[in-house]
Length: 253
Image (cartoon, rainbow, N blue to C red; front, side):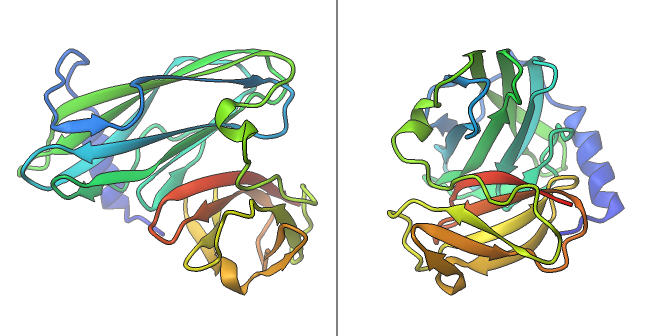
């Protein structure tokens, strides 16, 4: 999904107008703790994952944006996030495409994953969720923080230990023009679910494959890569109702 340069400029300007952290009057309620802590090992293969639902508790539809603010960084680690229909690479701090949430509805598309890449430490990331008023400026902000604690060499994040929904692709790195296999949890029903390929350099969705149409064998899905050029990509599993369930990184050589 490509964005016009004017859209990029507009959202960049709006992000600079975010109010101070002390103002939190936005009519939203988060479905998880606003101080999430995800623990795992800095040598583990599976990424550490955090999710958040955002409920509109007001009487009017809300158009929401999101900004990522890194409070503590572990050198060598990387993390991406999804919000709405788009996913964003490690160097992005702003979700360029806002979401609209109806009164009483809950948006569950936000997801962030973290890979320590062998680097021990604690990363702290704050997310600012803000609404736009009729003039297009930012108005009202709510915050939640995700702490990724990877100070031990081994271990799984609690929400991945019970049932990893999507396993690491193999081979990885993968040759261009081929295919990769991804382990998938048996509870993922093929009806309506999709597996998407995202360019992690700019967040574009490059391909969408219905799970029902992919080859499935011994708990794995075969994902064709097509003519992907060398680069860094994300394999995103999306449920029929639009929820982002899990993703894995993929390198194409």
